[in-house]
Image (cartoon, rainbow, N blue to C red; front, top):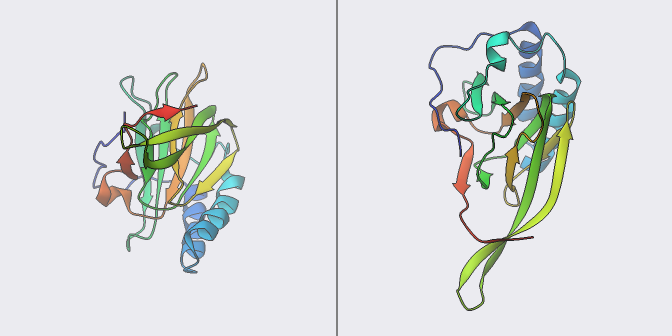
Length: 191
């Protein structure tokens, strides 16, 4: 299930460390580099903050027993990027999806499991496109990954026994869009 809960319109509360992260991301995004290079450099800026006790407020770590929860941490005024904390209780997952922009994820607490896919064009007797599962990855606390469309199809879940918290930096304003998801895939998937 893709969480599409609207974000609150009030300015989110923040921490000094998060303010520094926003400034670092702003500097990288302001360079106007290609999406894949931007994602790589943003990942370098995000990594040193992961796991730090002073990065998030307690309210940014609150989960929801019905589905993973999004907490908007920052949305740049010009729409150039946004930062979201995702909180995953054990067993919660996304659908298979891709994104509207480049994205960098960093695991702040716990671990995230991820299955990546490739989309194969329509062929064969049924004339339908299909997904091919690539690798399954377990991203522990402190790990960072970045990607840019196309080729960013995946499913993410908390396969651990405790809460997982990850930070996601998107090259779009998800407070206006409501989500970072461009498309949800309901196609046959091969292993």
